[in-house]
Image (cartoon, rainbow, N blue to C red; front, top):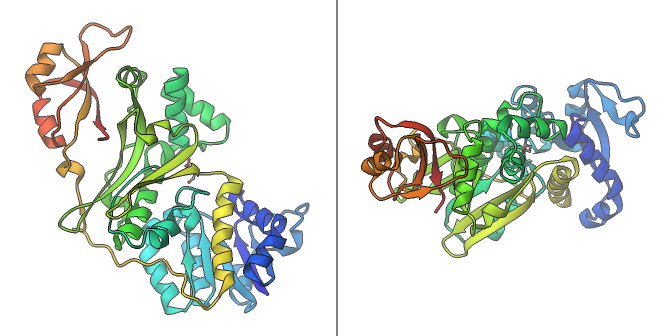
Length: 403
Ligand code: HSE
């Protein structure tokens, strides 16, 4: 029998309990053993829960119980979760998590700890919710040198941008709607300012390129600066504005990783990814382009990925299930300033001033544009080159165009 403990009975933790129970028969058959929930750790009381007999408040009960094989950490954050994960791994218990903050900030040391104690640390649910992406990266695509990853990695911001594009809502109106629907938190900072997408691109980069990349190494811009005017100008030329997490392998072996709103051409599959859906496009030197699409958040989709990791470990507790990457380094990550691309610019200027500054440009139009406003697409150049050319112009918005 394989015994499980869940840490945190919130949305994901309760989803994991539900999937383990509802799909218990097929999980047992797939593991070829009995997989049973033994403990749920939470500071709150749940007297009416069907799992009420499983609840404990003291982590050491789980830590010291030799029957517990796998700990599912769905507490979130990088404080209590770090302490409990460290202690579980040291006790030789494998840990499965959906906690992207913890993996992005402490992945290397926790993977090392798992290796030292002969257990596993798996986190499929930390990126893309229910979308299978981490295991395909490290197994199905293992024959490739991975070159580039481009993802819509945050469902909340994708929902907000979709509502701005489709319904003409302002950022504030769309954010309020996302909060009413339960997608955005009361404090939406982690989503709208890009931190959540940043953590996810760090995890994808580490798995793809083999070294830890820390969130503070990744320039991150959220969507607060995207205005309805930009959505309209972009739409006039068949572009959609999307928040992208990108990681590009550089020829010298370094990695360029960043998060920023982009104009995505209408014929790029990422342009059609709407609402709370996520998609991750991966480029490998043998496979070319491949894309993963699905529900990037939510109770049961996320639980689906967590329980898949549990099943993987439970099938053979002794096998090496580890993801792995090496320690990061301050000079591993290079600035996106090195990347040449087309740019979208909206400025308080005339078309003549824009042309004089940027040379050959493609002017964009929108109905109701005030006199003295200009929006255009530039030719290919780096951001420092562009900023130098724009000196003296009153720039309102500036976004990279995805090639
Ligand atoms: N807040 C995240 C999102 C949840 O909106 O995508 C899943 O990580």
